[in-house]
Length: 203
Image (cartoon, rainbow, N blue to C red; front, top):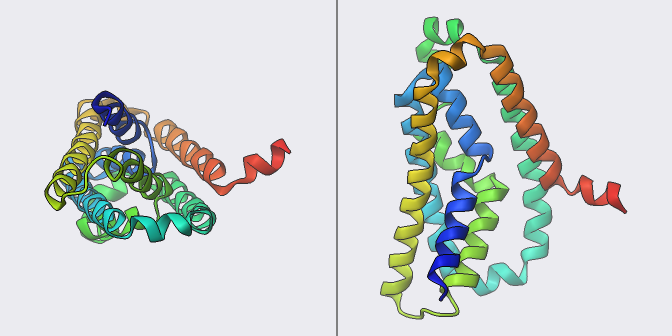
């Protein structure tokens, strides 16, 4: 296995902006690092479980990959649009005064569940396992080791976005509406890219 290519792929996919990272950044802004870390922990656990499922059912999953891409593209686009709407409605002052009720949707559980309909995460775990792990390692120990390594990389990526959000917290609060708008538009762009509409428009 090309270790450099493996690590580069993992870091590029997990550290670059995506639905989870964008939502973590906004959660830091509106609810603080503690809630963002809670969400990040759930997301990281989900990645670990998805990696285990990918290793276990790799051959079956890839036979159905075209169907999985189609379904995940549609579901993922709807999910991203939902997050875009949620981000556009976020308000710092409201978050501070209604913390208990407003934080119900930003939890370890939601961070965990949302990764199963996040196309970036699902397609990443499918491709990283099939291209870098399965062809080179057959033992349960090595596969489990790589699942752990990739999960740790994912967690490190999420935590880095929490730190980034905490450092720029006051800047983000000062320009809250602009930041929320930019992040919402970023999610709408992500939804457009995974929905397959861009392919139809280019034909």
